Length: 215
Image 1 (cartoon, rainbow, N blue to C red):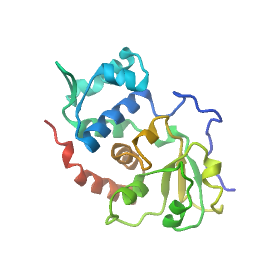
Image 2: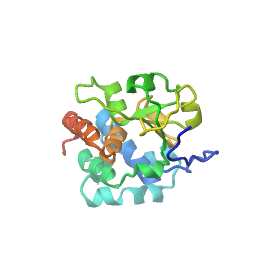
Image 3: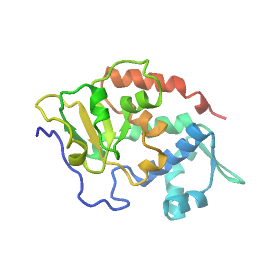
């Protein structure tokens, strides 16, 4: 099997993940805002939701507060500018931290996606195509999350060539947001993926995020 990168841990502990606690908190705020039209939360709520100390939550919110994306109100927290926080997260995100497992199957992307196991969570262009009608562009690489890459490729051929399947290590809360990567997760993963295809899908997502206007 032609494997370009491999680095998954055999045991997955709750916070042994390449997505940081800060990023997980940001994602949750963004999912609430962009997918559920809810911009309000509190440090107490976030602390309980992720079993984190309030001080940890507070530290994760320092930069969003400083840039004006987040504000403290009497009732708790309000995400005033989701797009600003989304772009800040995208600017700090690194897919390499998710220890990508890359293979070349030689199959069309639709067939790769159809043959992925149940626990695979598509992201990037594949997630966009699943969530919306793909009127953007063809794409040649499927990105997904899966805790066991060897299981994910068990039903797929292995050949020499450029990767057409990239499997990333999931964080412990990823699947809380559904079987497809959330809108914020998909956006930041596209933002940090090289190539014109990712750029086209990122532009299309930006046009769809009208709800992200500041208040």
